[in-house]
Amino acid sequence: MQKKQIPPPEKMLAAGRARCLTLQLRESAEAKKEPVLKQSKDDPASTGK
Image (cartoon, rainbow, N blue to C red):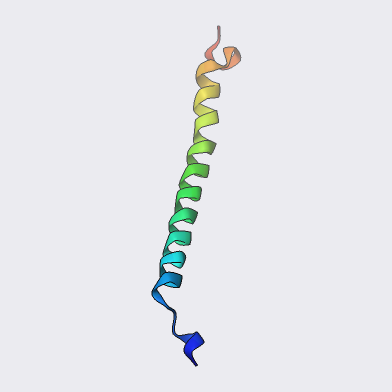
């Protein structure tokens, strides 16, 4: 019966996991945006040089 009651440490871990997931999603979104921006700037074909 005590297993149903989640102790604070587990809640902290769950919150930390959720935070890590949101950070990972944010980083992956930025990583997807960055190559496109870098490519358009650095790629000679796209700049027309």
